Length: 215
Image 1 (tube, rainbow, N blue to C red):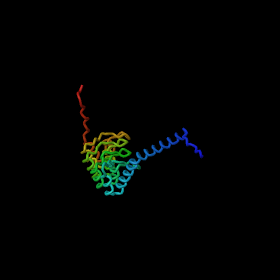
Image 2: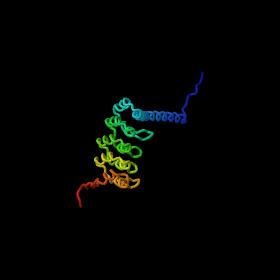
Image 3: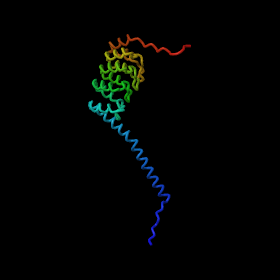
Image 4: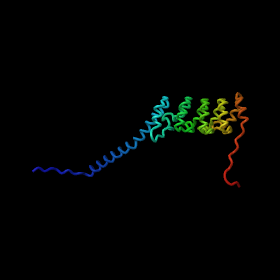
């Protein structure tokens, strides 16, 4: 008669198998959670690349996907949204395309610059006009407190300054870099000429009325 040793499970073996099972479960869960994130990253990369490559067919196929919310996604390297990219390259066709697909006209880049401010810096007058039509915030500051109007004055761009003032830009908002407003910069510029005159003739904004009962 042959006697066979009965297999026994020691506590250490049980613990080892339990640990292995747990690790496998955690790994599977991590992969499941990472899959949507990876897909989103890939989609973001492909969309930004399509915008940079001026590939409307690819961009449209991504934007038209069900449940897509990628229009205001940012470039992982630069922090620019698609709308910043097309304004920087003064591309009116792509600006219209992105706005039609819901691009945020007030989204800020890493320096706090809005598309309107970038259009001002680039003297992209047509874009300034369009962005104001879609209700871009005319006095939105960047990280050092500059408004589009301040930049227009510094660049001596009378045409853009007029557009901004007509849209309600406040000439007395000061930046945080020097503490000067658009009106201050215009008055200090000995070559400002028409801009100094334009800003001098622009009345100060009245303070907003206080809401609620008055003492």
